[in-house]
Image (cartoon, rainbow, N blue to C red; front, top):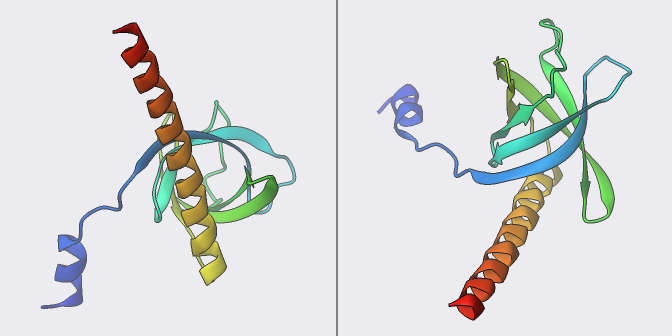
Amino acid sequence: MEKDQLTNNQKPATRTHTKIAVLFKASYERDFSQGSLHNISLTGAFLFNSGVDIHKDQKYVNLYIKLNQRNRKILAKVVWKSEQGYGLQFVRTTLQDKKLIDDLIYFEEQKNKTKQNILRNIFKKVA
C-alpha cells in the first residue's frame, strides 16, 4: 500500500468536548485576544474567537493556557477559518509539547467525569 492510502484510511483523532478559556495571538502580533478551545484532540482543536480576526497571512497562532496552576504556551497552525473561529492543528516539535496537550485533555476529561458523577448522585437522591 502507498503512504497516501494509509493516511486516507486512518480514523480521525478522538475529540474531547470541552470549553477551555485561552489567550491567543498570531505569531508576530503584540496584542492578546481572548477565546476558547472546543472539541480538543491530540492533533488539534476549534478556537472560538469572539469576533477577533486573525490576518489572512498569519498561519500560526500562540495559545496561552493555564494548566495545573501554571501558564503554558502551545503553538498551533491555522488549518481553516469560519465565521465562528478557526480550526487549529497543534504543532508538536518535542515530546514535551505532546505531553502538554495530553495533560490538557486528561484534566478536562477528569472535570467532565466529576460533573457527571455529581449529576448522577443528584438524580439518585431525587428519584
